[in-house]
Image (cartoon, rainbow, N blue to C red; front, side, top):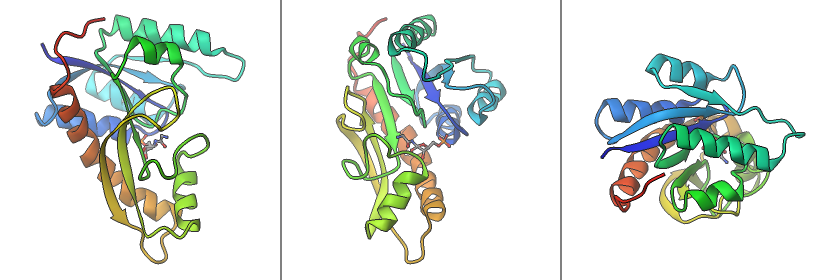
Length: 201
Ligand code: GAR
């Protein structure tokens, strides 16, 4: 049976698109059965509509509890028949109860060489700014499993690139994003194909 993936995104969704493209090109043997968007109007939703993928919005404001987010995520994952939850620039912390319900089935991509420049506050351009200000000569991206600690789950794949003289957070981010688009579908494919076939939800 083909694995069903639900993707969660908060922004433009270019990594989501790279997964859609990899499935079309048969580099990734899976079905994306849904998108979870953290707010209306984001690029990822337009990409879902173009690809005919159903989407749900989980509105997130500071006033909403983690329990409510967890129950919404769990019911979406169930309705979509998800075997895996793949985070593609999803900026909310996945509640512990969702991680427990999908052990080793939640995958994330992060735009640095974890464990460096990971954890709370390291997202988007903040990551690349810190890399440049720290005088690093290398950066890159990391695909990892999600556990209860931000950006600390088992590393599945990494790609290194050089930080160039004169790099700005924006130029470094753009070069790394290109690598993310190659690394993520390949790493997801490799991981799901060796995953026990008897998972069910
Ligand atoms: C990507 O660079 C991804 O690695 C990063 O958000 C961007 C999303 O871009 N994720 C994180 O920083 C997670 N901590 P996209 O919406 O174009 O895929």
